[in-house]
Length: 214
Image 1 (tube, rainbow, N blue to C red):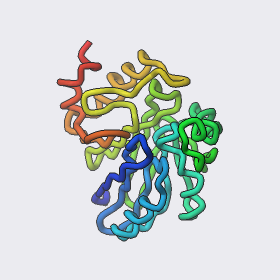
Image 2: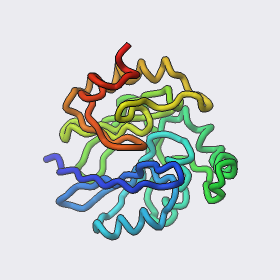
Image 3: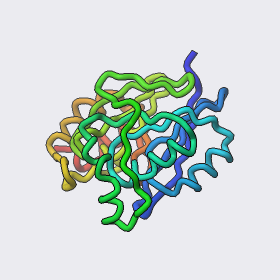
Image 4: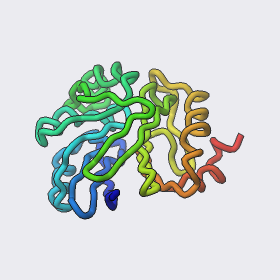
């Protein structure tokens, strides 16, 4: 039996990145998605919800999503899964990137498991399929719960926008292709949490997102 997913968003770092807690309602087993920083706030939210965190998930390797992952792995003693290995160079350079943004606590991180197209990730009884969706970064991945009709999309697509592609490894044409060929076909009823800003549905973005109309 698939579980019943719940999610809570914790905006972290000066970039107001949507660090997300996901967990199964019955078992209270969960994961932290994209712990970019502000780890004390993340841990306070975990305690408030009474969640037993079993892993950390990364959608991609940018500082605001992955800058706190290495330390949180040590604090919680859990593995990190994701992103795709094409983002290794971003994860390796987190200390330098963090220093440039005034985030000196960022540490390089190597996931315990890289993810690729067609892989599956479990969080307690919850199951997520993996899409490799490059463009915002070379190794961006999307986590899709087909049972719950829910996705965690990182910075691939936002309500009314798409991920920026002017950072190292970015490619606008590849991003739009990944959204149109992989993400939107999941179905209009899929609700998603993006890496920044409000939630939306794929149907709303297919119809109204100006970047997806051409």
